[in-house]
Structures are given as structure tokens and as C-alpha cells.
Length: 190
Image 1: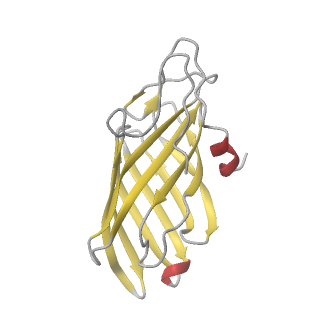
Image 2: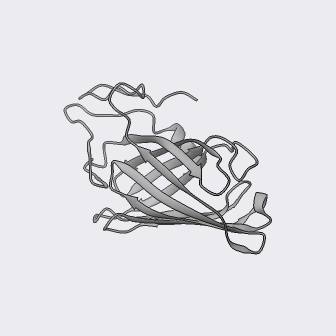
Image 3: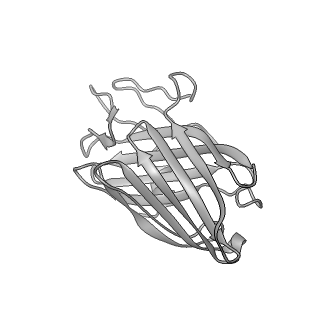
């Protein structure tokens, strides 16, 4: 299933008597249940002073996951890109591997993973807006907070720019999700 199709299908929570709850980076949901976790925050380019809102969605069902990263503002000093959708394979120890993405018009070629200790690495190569440059994001994801730093290599410079991306699960009531036993919820419309 393509990432866009999976995202369209992940807006409903099914459950007769259980609430999906994330502990650490492992979701305890059976294969009959799905849960969409949405993290909100901000990215900041520390070199050039630009910034914008960041939203990361992660839907886990068994050992399959679908998600998106939506960065607002002038990413790479140029555009407010559409969300980058991705698929991933989850492991019982909480680690996951993102299915490689090739030729995204903004982010180029993307790979990513999280190890069992919560360490995250995301790499992009062949960035179209930066003359084929690359970006490496590294940091942690503990199930509640994505805490990443990034380095952009472009135009012959190993560290053309650097910055941060932090996103957390918002306080209850701020996202527009209703999560209750046996009640459906819908992702915020965009």
C-alpha cells in the first residue's frame, strides 16, 4: 500500500474496550487496532534564523507504520513543502526502519531509522532545492518527544546550515483528537 493511501485510511481508531496509549516508543496495540499519534513543535535554522511549525504523525498497526512529517515555513529558504509521507517497519524492541523514499521534489532521497535505545537518524541526499546537497537529522524519539538536530551540507560546505526540530504530543484538548474507549477519532483536517 502506498503511503498516501495508508494515511487516508488511518483516521479512525477501532476499539471496543481499550485505549491505545504510547509507552516509550512502543505502541501496545493488537493487529486489530490502530492508533495515530500526532506530535507538534517547531523547526529552527540556527544558521539563517528561519523557523516554522513542525508536525509529525505516526500510525502504528502491528509491525507496520505510516506517517508524515509536515514542516511549515520557508524550508531550505525556499518553499513551504507538502508533508513528506513515509512507511516504516516496526520491531518488537521499539526500533523501526523507514522504507527508503527516492526522488521527493523537496527532500530528495530519504532514509531513516530508530534503534531500540531511541536514537534516530534520518538522512536526505540529492536535495533538489540545494543543488544536490544533503541533510542529516539525528537525536532521540522516546514516544513522547522527537528531539532532533540537523546539519545541511550544500554548495561545497560540509556545514552549510544547522538547526533543531522538536515535536511533542500536545496537551490534551489542543489538537482536536478525541480518544476514548470504543469511540472513533479523526485526525485534524488539513
